Image (cartoon, rainbow, N blue to C red):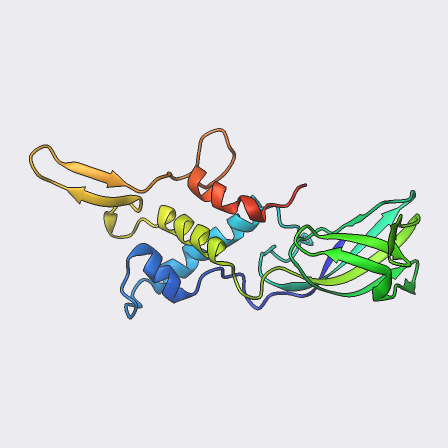
Length: 209
């Protein structure tokens, strides 16, 4: 069970300036900002869904930093506790059967979202019981490759001014020539709204469900 203790202030993976740049709008041109924000909000939520970011069923999931509390109940010993979210910034507290676990008695693999129990510096199993882990997960600063993925996804979806958002060059001399960015809008049979190009860029941020 996951509870959002402190939600992110917003779920934007790109600033409005970055969104304008991604679709070729001048930095000071605010005329399409409302459209960009609307399309961007949908893309950012779909990126979280594509990466299987866990939510509480009420607050939309995000890759941006939030404070969450997760309850893990087990009737058998476990070698590791698997957090619902990866990219752990800080574990604030762990209680096990209502007893606070000292930070020296566990270690966290932040990128994978794994928590190991320690005794005298050695790993031991977590006993059967109920653990409540309060932690920060997600990014306070969006990584560069995730920014690139969001920019590419926005460019793919953007259809303003009647121009194909994937077209990189349109040369008309005689027969004519068109050059497109690699990828496309989604891929049949994948269940994804994104092209293979964007999906590949998102691979490092996927959670295993």
